[in-house]
Image (tube, rainbow, N blue to C red; front, side):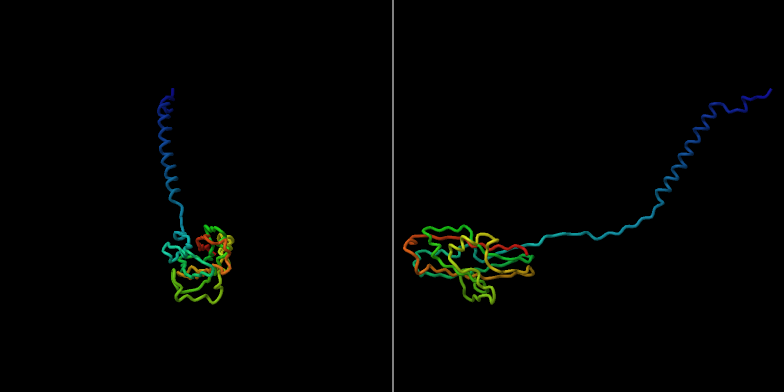
Length: 204
């Protein structure tokens, strides 16, 4: 009679044998994963950091916040002349226009004040000593204060043809002449006229 129970492994031994196989399989799997994670070559190329900055449009003048004219007690034929220097310090090419703001009048006095505005170089605020009219496009406006104040009221309707390049600080002198018309009617006695002059630059 053969001893078959001694030849066959017990159920306990078979279970242990199965469990022993699992760690070996896991270790083998880990080796494969480990080898796979280090098996790729790579290369990169990088463009240096890009940067953006905006240009500027900027205007200044030499009026020290003082009004161009404060003329009083005018009579027919009264006249006056002053200059102002406007400077572009922006970095962008631009186009500069002149227009009126806050224009007011009583007794229609503005209709009898003739204005001539000329562009050039030289002079300084309040003084036109050394002023020279530009060789071309020197005439900026010629007409009545009422016409200027009612038609040139924004950049779109402004006057002038100055185009700073933006490559360096550039200046233009504006000479403003006024005359109370010799034929101003009696109805303008005691009248008033006022306006601010505004220069505006927009990049081109």
